[in-house]
Image: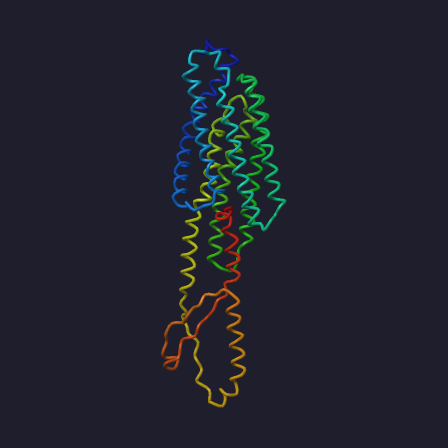
Length: 358
């Protein structure tokens, strides 16, 4: 294709668009390969999940459809329309449909994390409502863009339209990602307790939340900047091809990590329950018969109170190591109880980000 065969006003945008499409397509297919792997792992590890969660995983099917639509658009440009330069000014219908499906994926994933944020925040309707509110413009602008692109479909004419609507859409989606990531980290941090194992689990959940939001936030931010600053260069095409697949992978990763977190929590609880006491309290010598008879009533009352308190709280029982030198033969080593009520409440709150929604 020679430059002299193409109108000057069309050559520059077409060249930039084609170059960005060639770069973005292999990147998007690479991330899609990770989507396929994570989808396989999900159905293998969690066959008993609810229909609701399995329905969310169906976003991977939408991701497959976007790959098919991108392939159709590139094939149309570089094969079907080869030599027909006038047709190159018309956007393939698959471009508009692919953008709209990506918007559906974005909104679905953000609504899922808004629901998880609502749960771990103990019902913060304001924050969750703001995130839900920001998903409305994403869908509205996406639907309007599809209709306008099908009516116009002329490549040079659509540049200002894509710049205005796409920039607005990317800004709203970026704001939603920032709110989700910041909210998750805030409430995870406020779920800390005095237990090291619980805090380690919370740290890992915070890392997962930051990693989940970092990639989508960065790609949405770069897409916004390139749309506003360089709309005619079409650099945003590279990032728009990938961002939808990052949302799908963030959803699948948050569901697949549950098994790993469960194993780690069990290992930490096992380590905690095998504490060895380095020293053993010295057991006093037996009292006389008279002293024991005088104290029998008070000791019975105190033992009943101790048993009642033990029954009313979750506890782990630790037995001190044998040390026959400091106690009489035949007596049992003392038993120590540690209250787990606080840790159980905390532990039951924090994993909800990964395990709830069923």
